[in-house]
Length: 307
Image 1 (tube, one colour):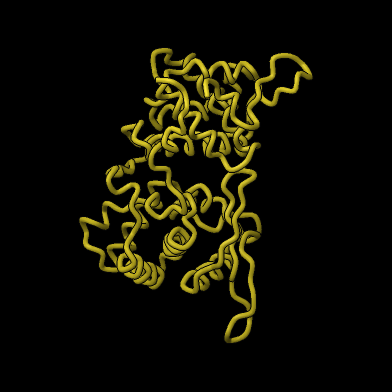
Image 2: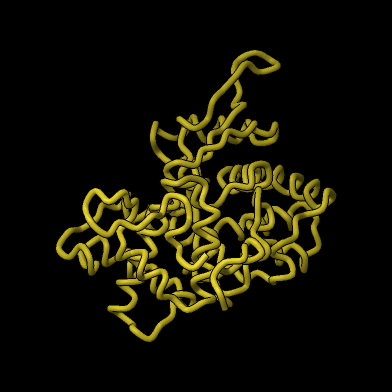
């Protein structure tokens, strides 16, 4: 490959009705990147779950890159911080993006853009091409790369489940439910933050009545997955569903804000400590270690783009 436009669904559009699928100018921006950044972008786009999410990913990256070059021309795409993502989202809300000046975007649209960018930077970070965590927060998550591609052992998972039960017994229902669902589904913080009552489907319980048995996890607009609810999470979800209006997120932080990666990592650490996992190991755990899939080597660079 010599162009991102060779990926399925990303044929550049150069003139009206020429069969192109994405803006040629967006494609040109990507193809002009330095080789390492180009390979990272191409591998991430290649791994998107559908043609639609691949097209959205390209559009969002191009939009962010235009804004970044207008603000800090010398800053590379793989060197941004969480502050840059926050500033980009703020600019989008007030209609200050280069390609759409004067057209404010809704909070929902901005949230989708942010989720897409976080997906890209998480991918790049896991592959070792970003050396810092792009997610803002008072305690930015730091993952030792040697641990980022490992999963918990069977014994550690058993202890973690014990810790989840102890968090629940202490009344920390949201944190217990979040870690239980993370452990059983490998869902991201963004996916867990988007869960509502409508995503939880119940069936008959052993003692009569109904219990949550299936949960629908959304990652982006087009990527849906159904998971069986583990027994330990069923009473937690039933309690959350009973206390949340329809359409309102099930899992929230104590201040009412949606969970983010830092919050989820803290909850994971607390559950691990409560379950008896040694402190040094517990504090090195990260939600990405429980993800359903991880990228380890830029898709072995897939033979993409010359050096």
